[in-house]
Image 1 (spheres, helix red, strand yellow):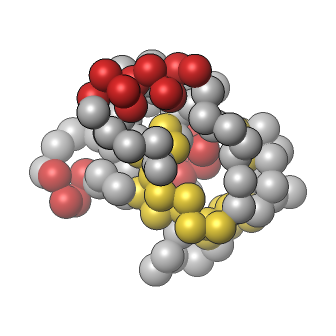
Image 2 (cartoon, rainbow, N blue to C red):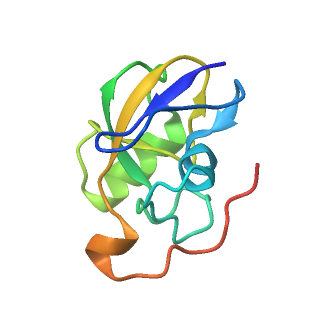
Length: 106
C-alpha cells in the first residue's frame, strides 16, 4: 500500500487508487474541499514535495488558468494515490477559519 506523508504528521498508508483528498481527510489532515471535490474552488490544492501524480489533468489546467494560479500545485480531489508521496496542503481549515466543505465522492 502506498504511504502518504504530510510534514509534521505521522505518515500513513492508504489503499492504492484512493483520492488524495479523502486519504488526507480520513487520516486527520487539515484540508479544505469547499466544492465537494468537483475541481471548482481550488481549496484542496496541495504542494507535492516528493512523489508524482503524473501530468496535470485538463480539468486541473482549466481551473488553475481560470483562477490565475500557476500549475505547480495539484488538486487533491483530482489525483489518486498510487505510489508513496509527500504533500503539503496549501489551504487549511485552521489557516482560513472556513468550514472544510462537503465530503468529496470516492
